[in-house]
Amino acid sequence: FEFNQSRADAAREEIDENGLKEYCTVTHRDIETNGFPKNLETAKIADAVFLDLPGPHKCVESSANCLKEDGVLCSFSPCVEQVQRTCVEMQKFGFVDVKTVEMLGREFDVNERKFFTDIEKASTGKFSRNLSERDTKSVKEETKKAKKGLNTKGGEEEESVALVSQRVSAVPRFQGQTHTGYLTFARLAPLPEGWTKASWNERAEMKREAGKEILRAKVERDEGRKKDAPAPSNSTGKKRKQEDVAAVAPMPTKVHHHADEDEYSD
View 1: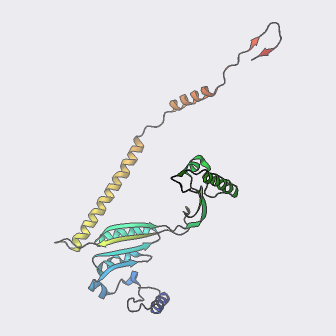
View 2 (view 1 turned 90 degrees about the horizontal axis):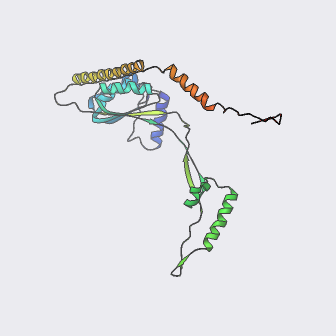
View 3 (view 1 turned 30 degrees about the vertical axis):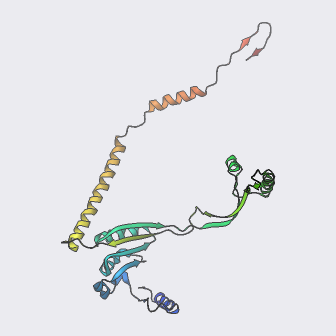
């Protein structure tokens, strides 16, 4: 379902070009305003619903009506405020196991690098991700010397290990290059025996209120601790300042006077 007519037509053409017309359909419809078609809500045959909308919280009730029991609802949102509203609606309409994951786009720099394979040299600080030409030359000379001094056992020469190895490495970039996003997943739980949607909604409302009370009590407790905390003593601060000044004060200079010489020395 796509609310923009031109995008819906383009998607329909792409599906036809790839031979998927038998398995996929595209419908022009504003789901936020009108919800899913009534025939889908009545049939309740959807295994999963994926929402990529500015206001996904507006469609949670209609999505719940279309899903089978234990069906999955997934919503993509770029802002956490959208996620909060959607999670509230999910709890209201019988969804459980609500989970949100953040999506971060991060690129990797892949290139060929030369690494020391000798652990002793790496531990002495000679390890370098990018070896200079001079370092590479010196290590090659050491490798040749090491090969000349190989021990032999039973007439067989032991296999030597080069001190430098050239390999492909992949290093992630620490600075994000793309806008973050959030995926929220939830499962439509079947109603317990003897329950109705009204009783489920009442229970969900009670849980929300209990959560608010817990949060409110925590905030009040933290504010009370800040008020009861003793203020730092000024006398202690002055005493420490005097000690610091005394610690850095120079030692008094001793001056010796010689009667026969008209000079002073330290």
